[in-house]
Image (cartoon, rainbow, N blue to C red; front, side, top):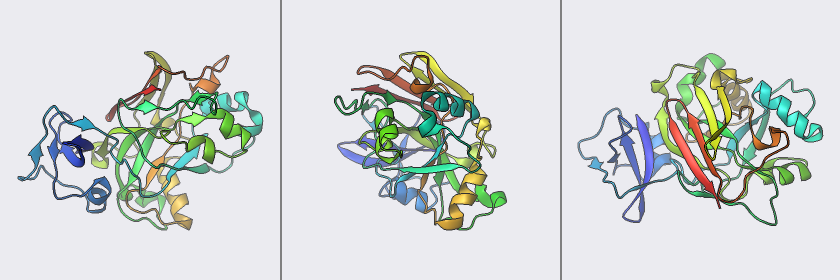
Length: 280
């Protein structure tokens, strides 16, 4: 199943699709967080309302209940390019996964703008990532049981202000400006993939392929991530985990090449779709 949040007649509605083409509104759910907590649906309900062409697709979870949990430097090739850009900020040994969080007041969806913050940000960057959505409260989860706690997957663009990220000696502020967490276009349920999913992940800027990898190249895998985090905190249903980005980000280019107003950023993940946004 594919779950969407759409705007219909000026209101946010939760919708489902079995084929990625025909959408149906699910009136029994107040929002996506409610749907996740209640396990979704196994088939299109009889009372589901067909969605016409006048609806707008939003982020699947426009208002996450908590900060998005993120993995830093979780692809080997990205570790090399990050160290080259700033060894002080990104270098050194990493015997354990790097975790940080990302404040999200509102997550915009496909075709929405990414704010450029002229005067504050001089190095706006993109990061295409596989987002893991937790389906039920998870605490002290063993690696072999991790798949049971996953509701589904989405695409996350972990937009980053590199000058703020490096200037403040931590990543929270440079990752958390309003508009820095586009997601979408939908959540695809975990049963649509083998576990762990080994699927293509790529990012294009103005049609040029910048990132091109596979989620099978994650350093810390999804089961390990869930197991480690749940040792010390409860991952509530609806928690979003951004699993890290592959190489090819703007700071990794020679010379570094950052986003400008008018640039079109398209994040693609095999089996999920495309998340396209425009820098404004």
